[in-house]
Length: 202
Picture (cartoon, one colour):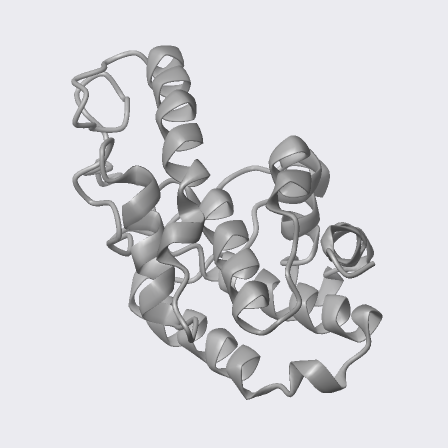
C-alpha cells in the first residue's frame, strides 16, 4: 500500500496557509509571494553561512505560505526529470538530509576561497552546491533556497554573485543542478558556466 503524502491536502495540492486548493492558483500565489520575500534576502546574510542558515533562508522565503517552512522534509522524494530522460535524481532519504547537507556545507567552509581563481571558485562551488541541492532538504522550494544560500555564501566569502542571473534563468539553473546531481553521470559544465557568469568581479 502506497503511503499518502502528508504534505498534500485531499485535493492533491500542497497544504498551505493561504487555503488554496488548486495547483495552478497555488503556483501563482507562491511565485508572487516569494518574489517579494526573496527581494529582501540580503537582510538575513550572516557573517558565516552554515546549515542552520539554509533552514533560515527557506523559512524566510516560504513562511507566509507553508507552516513547515524552514523544516526538513519527512518523506522520500522522486521526481521524473526531462533532462534525465524521465529518471529521478537520487535525493537524500529524510534521515540522511542533515548529515549530507552539513557535510557539503562544512566542506564549503573549509576552503580557502580567496586563494582560488574565479574559475576554480566556480568549479568548487558547482560541485558542492550540487551536493546541497541533491540532499533536497525541503518538500518544496529547494532550488530557490539553495541558490539563495549559494549567493549568501559567496557574499560572506568575498566573491559576490548576481542572483538576478539565476532568477532570470530558472529552468537553466534547475536543469544544471539536476545534471550535476546525477551520481556517476554527473556533469558540471552548465552549472559552472552560470556560476562563473554570475561573478560580479568579472
